[in-house]
Image (cartoon, rainbow, N blue to C red; front, side, top):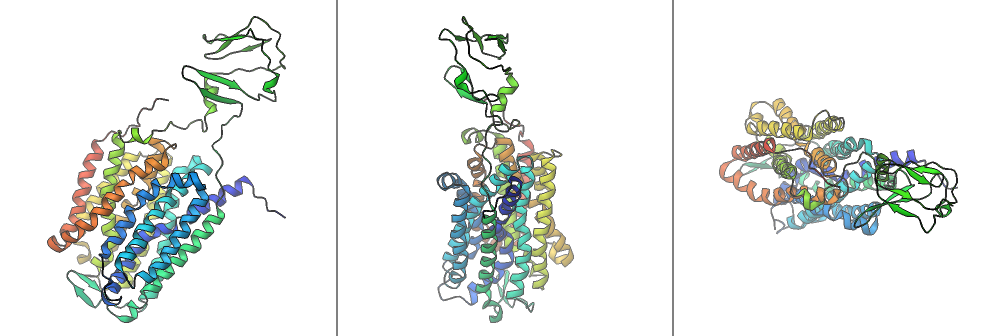
Amino acid sequence: MKLRISDKGKKYSAIVGAHLITAPFSFLWVYGNLSEYMDSYFRFSCSPGCMDSDSGWILPVSIAMGCPGTLLSKPLADRMGLRWAGAVTAIFLNTALFASAWTVQMSVAWTTVLLGVVLGMVQGFTAVVAFQLVRAWAPDKATLFMATTTGASTLLSMVQNQLVTALVNPNNLKPDAMQGSRTFFSQPEILDRVPMALILYAAMTLGLQFTGYVLLFPPPKLASTSENFKMEETTDKTKLVIGNVNGCDRSSLKPSPNTKAVADGHNPQEYGSHKVSSPAISFNTTEKNYNLPKIDITVQESQLETARPFEDEKASLPPSKVLKTPIFYAVFVFGIATVFALILKANFYKQFGLLYIHNDQYLTLVGTLIPVVATLSRLVVGMVLNKKIITIKDAIIFSLAVNCFLCAFWYFVPQLNALLYLFFVLGLASVQSLYFVTLPVATMEIFGPDHFSTNYGLLLTNLMVVGILSPVVISPLMHVLGWFWLFGSASILCLVSLVLVVCADFNPPQISI
């Protein structure tokens, strides 16, 4: 007996599945906790010669590769279909995650390839799959669901951070080695468990993604709201083709050979024994021997618009025109400043905190609460953007202003109080998480849905810029100028971006159809 699922059931199942397949996004929030153990493992426990690269490249490369992953989504989806292309890339990803438990013992470079290049590309592709699915199934709440799909993975990292620390450092041992301005663990009972932590993370990701792709159903086709009308554009005129109207087959319409169409005003003309009104087309007949059923057709200009899917949908900008709008560059520089500060937080909130707060489990708790606050922030902003309470520009200005202020005082906070450092890091997480809402929403709402994957990929090139340049910049800043100027550089970058965003024109571009 074949199980039949209603359209409503398919909708809810697909939306839940779209949230589950974003499980790899949690790496951004887990790595801040995991990197302290991995860096210690690279220095004190892995095989000779494993330090063939800088482990500081892992997270930036993962962020950077989200851009090419997004751009590859369209050709892959066109060839294999959205669902199956996502499933294949998920298999590829989870194979790489399990393999990283072996490469971490052998090579920093190969670990960077698996956790940076592969993971980042699949994250970019998965984001497009999730965003397009929730928009197709629930277009009226697409903005909200874009926020919740990215927020689901941050909540997942709350559990993963606790499990990683419970597995690797259950006795809450303190770092016992100091190199330069950083602390490390050298205890064998901690280091021996690092590969198992990667296997644990890979197993959770595999289980959630597998469940998510099982729950997915193909989205409804963007068909016309009425099958009765089609617009056929020619080089010099637009022709209305009338199909099956109220059960009347087109073959029953038998106009005389002498019938001709004359473009005039809105005046109705005789069409057999019935009147037909058209904004640009009327029929002048010399014979009235039409074999027509008794129907009454009135086609107004507003009815012609129903030939388009989604009556209230805005026209879309192609990538060539998107690159000419000031909105694109305003959002682009916002992304550069925010992601740079986010990389600093993800990489160093725990490493820097351990210099003054000698409690590994407490700092793990800080990392555990980060996704909670980030998710709530995304939900709130997603809802207010969906209800048009604030604009995208308002959200970006708020994020940059708070980010700039907090980064300016980052160096002093953990030296003052451990509880204050908790609220400080959570404040950073709340405003930085707006990046993951404003980018897809701006792409969809301002530039339109038709070229979403390409336009979104173009915006995500800011990830490539930050991902490639930040490892080159961070190490010299930290070793030459120290922690203060490392965090101060993020504050200065946010300030410059804030000025550019405030001066930018965020009015939607005029699009001629």
